[in-house]
Image 1: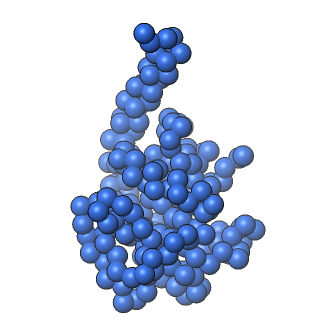
Image 2 (image 1 turned 90 degrees about the vertical axis):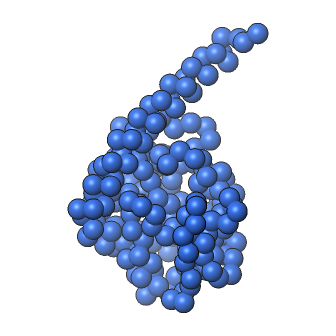
Length: 201
């Protein structure tokens, strides 16, 4: 027998899933258009990221950082990686390995190979980067993140509860509501080409 509370939660969850899928379709197309027509935005985002890392009180002394390597229309991280390298950060990239994700240390000689879930990165493992940078499909002003829908990032990020989490997005990816659920991992900050969004709580 299904009680009313269980049924209510299930209906709410099903409704959220449908709304999130609709958002994904809308913002995937929007992100593709931005990525194709406004390549300079990645430079602006990199500048804002560096500003955040050098001025935000909780981040000034944190020098180990894990980033993603751009896949499809995601914000291009190459300008950010170049700037972080200039500022002597210890950089790692997300490596997709047999359905597992690991951060592997990056340098100018790192070999990056595309695979089914992302990229395979050569280099030694960075176990717990103090800062993690994530791609975003859509977000709201509370720094809730909407991803591609596989749940890979959310499961992965739960192992890094003490890391400061930064999302990179275009400002036009902002939505009023991305319908977060209990398993979704919220970002601490989201950086766009126009501004830096921080959680109110």
